[in-house]
Amino acid sequence: MALSALFVVGLGVAVFVGFNVGGSNIGVAFGPAAGASAVSKTGAAALMTLFFFLGGWTVGRGVVRTMGGRIVPSSYFTPETSVIVLFFIGFALFLANVVGVPASTSMTGVGSIAGLGLASEALDWATMTEILTWWLVSPIVAFWVSAVVGRYFYSRLASTLAINQTQGSLFALDRRGVLPRPRLGANTTRREAVGTLLVVIVACYTAFSAGTSNAANAIAPLVGAGTLAIEPGLLLVGVAVGLGAFTIGRRTIATMGEGLTEMPLLAALVVAIVSSTLVTILSWFDIPVSVVIIATMSIVGLGWGRATRTVDERTDPLATGGTSVSEAVVADEDLRDPGATDEAAELFEPATTAKVIALQNLVPAISTIAAYLVFRFLTVF
Image (cartoon, rainbow, N blue to C red; front, side, top):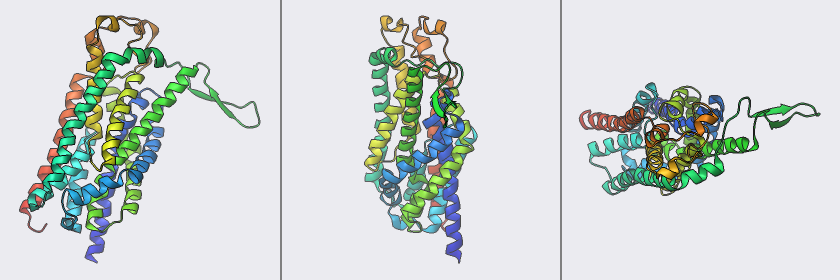
């Protein structure tokens, strides 16, 4: 009876973790798209739920096995320890969501499990070293790939793919026939329609990549303990992520879509493709990595690359890349000569960026230290 009650508590804590994962990750995936009015916050939450689940169900299973048995042997995941680990993951993520900053979900989850391993002297240092190495390397790769794109290719891409948003709805329904048919809005250009759909598709890809790495955080301890099978666990986390995306996720969407950066849509596409591809590749090799830190460093790298372009490139009237995330850029602004400082500020707000990066490292530290202290000094666990 006690085990049954503990199992129910474990499921409840797993839902709490998934809830906070959804609230945190939706900002990274759909912040730029929602900020650009390419998709509503409700539509973003629905798409986030679907594609996060698909990522976890397909590529993410290996990450579940890593966090549920490679960092610390699965025998150390008793029902009691699993509940405590999940609690610290969820609590740390909740603190970040309260202030509207998307925290590093994978780092928080791995940190809590590492705290258990350190306290019980069961940490697999080979696995942990491999994970830590990729935690250091992946943001650097994201920064430099994005910086190269920003410095050498962004102007050319902007001249080809620049998207200017027009007033009014993107699509409308033509009701003149027997059945209503979708058509472009009154002011919508074909390029705008294609570009906006591309932004949403890339956001869905980002949600998929988040699922490949982060679904494990909510269920890996329970799977490792043998109290929950992986398939129903992934279904459970999919529902919980959806709850978080539809509720507290609105704050992180605002932070990533408006507070951290006023990104042109093209810049949002570059950041999403670079960061999501890195996360998906590493998840394929069962390595849990931080979606938000990789994405943040990609934003910073792209901004730095654009800010250090040659003078000739800076004076390219197409260098601004079209519409900003927060509002449509008027023609006069598109034709001005952007200086290096303006270019950098356009892609990231230094004060908000510093806050985000600080919390992204503080939250995992909180979960690691708290888990270590509990498992080290409370012998009941």
